[in-house]
Amino acid sequence: MWLTLFVAALAAWPAAVASSQTVEVDLIFPRNGTTYDATEAVFPFIFAIQNVKASPSLLLTLDYNVFPAGDYSGNHTALTGSRDWQSIDAVNGSDPYFISDFSKALNATDDTSANWELRWTLSWSNCTASDDVQRVAISGGTKLQTIRFSTAKSGGQRIDLAAATADGTCDESASAVALAIEEMLDNPFPDRYHGKSQCPRLANATPKADPCKVKIDQALASNITATLANKACHAGPNPPEKCPGDPKGSLATHGGGIGAGTWMLLLTGFVVVGLGW
Image: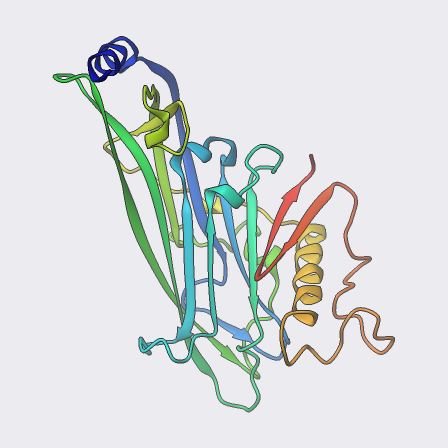
């Protein structure tokens, strides 16, 4: 039996499919070193995946935590979240593919400012071909990104997702991870790679990330804000003072709610947003 498998591996490996492309994960909001107006009840956190249709083969996992800057005890976390490749709709999702989350813990209750740290880690899997023994070697990697930002009751920037990605305002050094897929290799043993018959071989050189390529227009920004606000109203204790259905406020409406050509999926603890089908 093992001889049969080995012969099959020799026949099938390492045939490759030329598919050179780059997958990139960017932190869109907040930005490093920026102070934000914390009078809003809901503070958003936005990630984007560029070239999402090529991402499933990388088996991506995104983990993130927000806590008071310098406090690594884990006792005062304002937000924690995780997404893996199985929950990312790479087939129907648009490009870029947005992952959104929120915190209600950053709202300022006094005139003092607060300093925060956001740490996010991207993990991935890939494979290599060993020419001498004609077999697959499965490996992977992780990349940690850290930013610091502040919130204040007065004097901070207004939370504006569209403005954060507008031309001339994007920071070229924004927090981002780019992975270059050199080619797709046929995998003779899919059970070793989550049932996938191919796995990516990554380039040795790290490609330059281009987070400023991601744009959020005003309509999408309003939809993201409205959806996060609606989620906050139904997520645990201490909902915002104004929620959908409250005739005194319009926290979650923002220009008519969900617009045409936009799809949204509400999930526990996070929101996934794409443009069109």
